[in-house]
Structures are given as structure tokens and as C-alpha cells.
Length: 430
Image 1: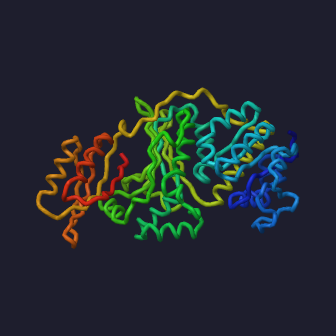
Image 2: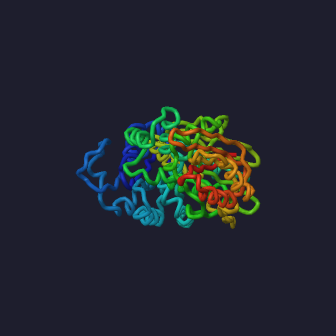
Image 3: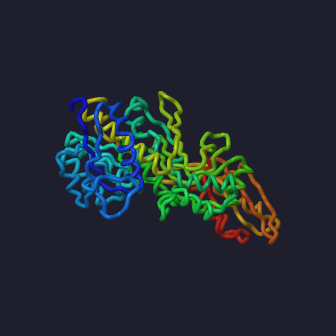
């Protein structure tokens, strides 16, 4: 391509993020042309309803309800998929790659399930699929893992990669809000979807972890390979006791290389107040990556909201444009995947926080200690608070222990006559 040429963009879907992308291209087209030496034009957009009013005004001929008008248009160089979900996005992206069009997507569900397959298809047809916006909102994570850190052996990553749950937990922690009020506020501010189940139950973070860990450890992963827990079990009492013990509660995504395999998980955990992740508030995300050459690196920024995601999509568009012009290249092709075994929970270990309600009677501590001790679980910290209704709230933190052994001991504890059902149980970040 020669300087001064225009690259035509076709977009699949024009919801909140798509509208943001269109706005940025319309508003900042000249600035983008100055940076790339080439113009970017939004030529065709697939929508469901042509009559619907939109925040960004586009020429009527730009909009279409026919996917082929985008996929098969020979003048379109780059297809941007912002529909979400697995189908028809997977089929349409595959078709676009087969038409030798580069693809940009923010679809974390699709890339977590089928990213390797689509990357291979792209390279077979001499094109690339860009997906920076699928993880971390506006935080650049994919490009650093694929390029800047390629000489490193990644040892561990741990982070907060879901802005919705982090916003909710922040409001519960800093303002004493209950869960439902914090969720409502997140919805009002656009940080939570109308149906926030994927966020609250940890699936959104699991999709992102699948993408990041697959890149970091060069292996094929699925969200089915590891344990996923959400934040619905976090109560105000847990947040209060965590603070009293010197912690805050965050939804963490973790991946670490162990001698026997890869330790992966998404779960709420107690984070020491001295740890940098403890100060990551509201919709912000942060992730620590430890490499054998670089040591610890931290990436931080907004992880929820349409504007950061739209900005990441446009950054991918610019990279795709530069690649088509022969500037910078499209990154590394999919290499040989390592055979790696995700470790089962029984092979993992952690410290644990446990909150129990017990009848306030003599000998309760003794029976608790015996039940834990029989499985080799030693206790590090214990708090007991007397309740007005004749019960006591007991909070304890264990030393590092094998997870299978811990849960065996917990099963014995909840069978004790003095212990009420429904304990609060969370891991503790080590």
C-alpha cells in the first residue's frame, strides 16, 4: 500500500462498543492518518435494525443487515467483529479470514474457546486476527505478551481482570454497601450488563485468563480446565473481618508454572493490604506478570466501560493498518504449543480464610482444632466474636495447606453439632 491510500473497515455489530469505535474513527480520523500515513474509513456496518436511532450518525448506505455486504466486499480490508458470543461471530470471522481480510475482535468468549483455531486460519490465509480489546479493557496486555516479553519464561501471573466485580467489592469495602446496592450502582454507571451473571460468577475473568495464560505459557487452554468461583458468596461480614486481619477481598485470576503442571484458577481471595493489588479500586484492573528475565511487571488501567474497550479496538485497527502497509509486522504466528497439564484442585495448596457460626458453648475451639488437626491443617490466626443470640462468630486463617486436605477437614468441621451450616471460605493470596 502506498502513502496516502485509504484502508476500508467493515464492522459487524454496532452496540455500545461499536458506537464508540465509530465515534473515534469519525472524530479522530485525521489524527490517525497522521500517525499511520494512511486514512481509515468505516465503509460498511452490519446491524440488526436499519431504522434504529444511533449515537453516531453514519451515511445510510453504510448500514446493512446482510453479513455478505461486509464479508465479501472486495474493497474492505479489515473486518471488526463486535457482535459478541460464539455464533454467528465464529462463522463470520472465519469467512472474513478466508476472504483474506484481517480481523479485529473484542470477543473474549470466542477467543477463549476458539482463539488458537482462528489464529491458525488467519495465518493460513496470510492475515492476522487482533484481539487486544478482549482482555483488560484499555490495558495493553496481548501485545506485551506476544512481543515485548517473548524472551521471558513466564513464571506466574495474578491479577484483577474483571472491572464489574472489582467495582462491586470496592463499594462494599469502602462505603459499606451491601451486594445488591453495589451491583445497582455498577449497572447505573455502565460497568455491569443487564444480566451480569458472567461477571459475578467469574466466567468473564475465566475467559480472559484462558487467553492470557495460553499466550503466557504457550499452551492450549479452556475455561473447563480450572476452578471458577464468583463473588456472590462474599458478605459484608467477610469484608469486615478481612480488614480486621489486614486484608481486602478481590476477585483474582491466577496462573503459575509448577513442576507438575500449570496452576490456574479464578476465585475471590483475601489480598494483604500491603500488596499493590489491594489498592486497585472501582472498575480498574491490574495484573502482575513475573518473568525469569524481567522479574515482576504490573499492568494497570480501566477494565470496564465502553470507551477503554473502544480505544483498544481502534488501537488494534491501527496495528492492522500498519501491518497491511508493511510497518511493524503482524506479530508471531502460532507456534508449537507445549503439552501442559492444568493441575486439579487436589494438587494445589493455599492458605484459607474460614468464617463459622457456632453455638457459644465450652469446648467449641477444642473440637474445631481437633477436626482441622486430624487432616494436618494448622491455624495461623483466630478471631471470636460473641453474638447476641447465643452464637459466636469464629474467623480463622490457616497456614498453607493442600486444598484436598483442607476441604476434608472443613467437611468434618461443618458436621460438628455446634457449627451452623454455610461457612464463608476464601483463599488467601500468598
